Length: 367
Image (cartoon, rainbow, N blue to C red; front, side, top):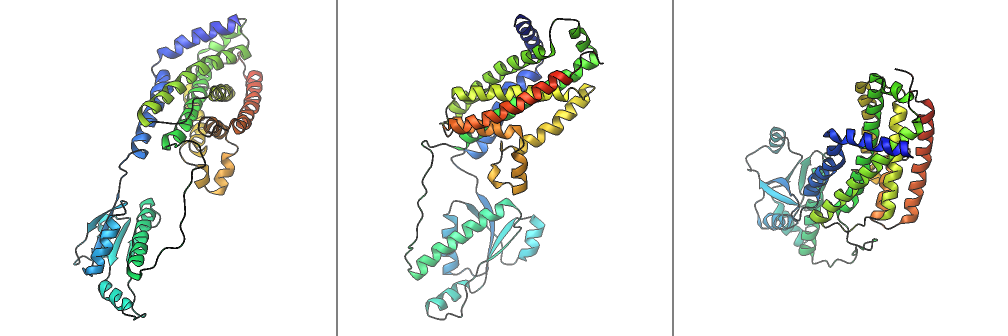
C-alpha cells in the first residue's frame, strides 16, 4: 500500500501540472452544462420563423393567422403574394413555408352555409427531414383544429391529463448532468491512460519501473485511486454548478460516488489494455478517440436511447458507458438504487475483465 500511495502522489503531481488534465476534469463539464443549459432550459424558448403567403387576405385567413401566432411556437413572416413560393423557398433555403390559398375565407363561408363540396385547405411546403419542419407542422395543425372548433361550435370530448411519474419536478439539466459526468469519467480515465501507456513505453519508463518493486497491478491501482478522487471532485463541482445556475432537483447520492469509482476502474483498465497495442502517443490518442467518441454519442449521454433506431439501441447495450450513465440517472434522478445496483454490477464485471487482461498482457520490458 505504501508503494501504491507513493505512486498516487507522484503521478498526481505530474498530472496536475499539465493544464489539460484539470481542464478536462473540471472546466470541460462546466462548459458543457453551461452551453446545453443555456439552450435547453431557457424560460423563453426560441420560436420557429414561419414564412406565410396569404393569397386570401380574408376574414378567416386573418383569424387563422392570429390563432397560429398565439401558439407561441412560430413567428410569422409574411411573404408577398407576388412571389412564386417554390422559388422563394429554394432561394432562401427554407425548411417550411405555409400558403393560404385564394378563396380560403369564401370556401369556409360556403361550408358554413351547407355547401359540403367546398374545401378550405392550407398548403404546407417544406423539407420533412429537418427537425423544425415537424415542430412547425404541429403548430399549423393545432391552430387549424382550434379554428375548426370555433367555426363548427363543436365541444371537445376527449382530453388528456399529463401526470409526472417522478416525485420531483426535474428539468433538462437533471437528466443531462449524469451523462456529462459519465463522459468526463470516460475521457479522463480512458484517454489519459492510453496516452500515458504509449508515452511510458516510447520513453522507456516502463523499463525503469520494471527495476522497482512496484507491480503492474499496483501501478494500475494507483492510477485508479488518483482518477477516482479527481473525478469525484469533478462530480461535486459539476453538480454544485448545476444546482446554483439551473435549480437542479436531483440528488448527489453516495451510490453515485460508488458508480464513479466503478466507471473509473473500468476505463483506467481499458486504457491500460489499449496501451498493450499502441506504440506511441499519437497512435494512443487515435485509438482512444476511435473507441471513446462512438461511446460518447451512443451511450445516451446526449440523446435518449429511446429515440435511436433499434439496431443502435442494441449497440448501446454493449457499450460500458451506457451502464455508467444509466446508473447515475437511476440513483441521482429516480432514486432507484436497485436498478443502479444492476448497472453497477455490469460495470464491475467488465472492469475486472479489463483489469486482469491489462495486468497480464502489459509488458514493462518491451520498448
